[in-house]
Length: 176
Image (cartoon, rainbow, N blue to C red; front, top):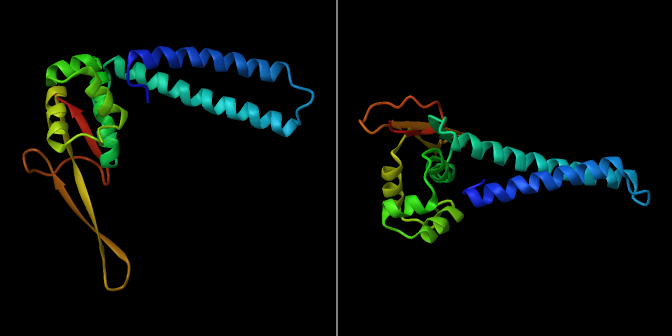
């Protein structure tokens, strides 16, 4: 995931480099390289190129401010969603740090670990500054006597009502 403008510029440059490399591999095959190895090399470059293109497209979409919500299925994905929310809000790491009375480097450290190194209270602070709310459900897996797993779902929302998230999914919404 691209987390800032510097990474965005670097990734865009890498996309151009990989596109050139792919064209060269396809147009000027190495005669000493076995065809299967050549194809594996081309496939590897294509795969990395596609991944970088997806990262660039995601960053550009977030920067456009269009996403109304960011869907996640785990706590880890929710924490990654905080970086996505920051980008969608048009805030730099520095600007978020200023709003939280932290240095830009601290935000960089948090985002480098997808907020895993961040305390719960700090996560709540970040969410408040970004105007992010979470609604969803928790799924508890219980072992029954027959050895089959059964699930108990508990839905919650800020008002104590059932959330409208689909089964096993949660949504980070931006406040308007």
